Image 1 (cartoon, helix red, strand yellow):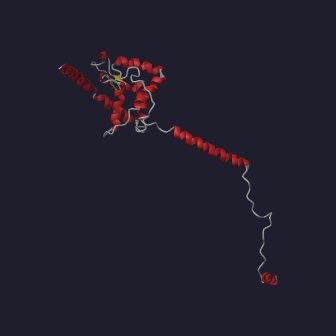
Image 2 (tube, rainbow, N blue to C red):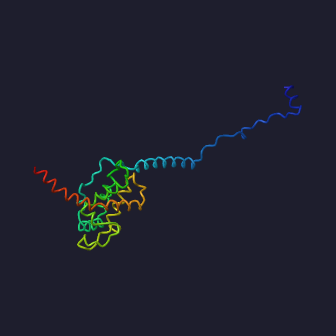
Image 3 (cartoon, helix red, strand yellow):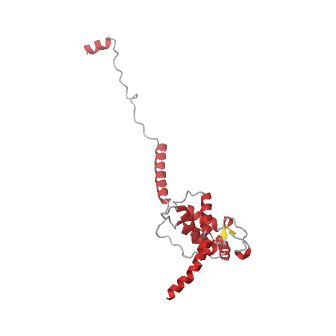
Length: 211
């Protein structure tokens, strides 16, 4: 005891110990803060569930039933196209079915997969007998549509339906509108030659079947 007093008296003050009132005591979490953290955790859980539900559907998804014809696609003439335009105007479910059918065409491993996909999309809705009589802007042409003009796709109701089907495919979701128009023009460009070739091929095929 005496040595301790001597030590303190030599210029070293005695240590100060905190009283119980001065000691840091862990404070309980405020009820409002606890509720906030609990609510935040629940929101995160819901977001995870929503993200899973919004996951893009694969092109080979199972369980999707789409009528094969979808009201007689592909269309074969200007008259059929004009009638179909009226159906698309009044039937939102038909627009969804056509768009979904195009989305589910899937990607092929080709050199120009965008051109291939756009061409197959249009051939899903148009037979070559119709594609040869349409183009993007439309123009006077005495050889088609009773001498009136080629039908312009830029203002047809079926065009945004086809576009929606193409862009809803996760592989082509970033395709720019200019690219889509370019590939559409390319898909229509050779329709006449394909149509003529098919017409020439039919008699030959029939003759070979008869032998």
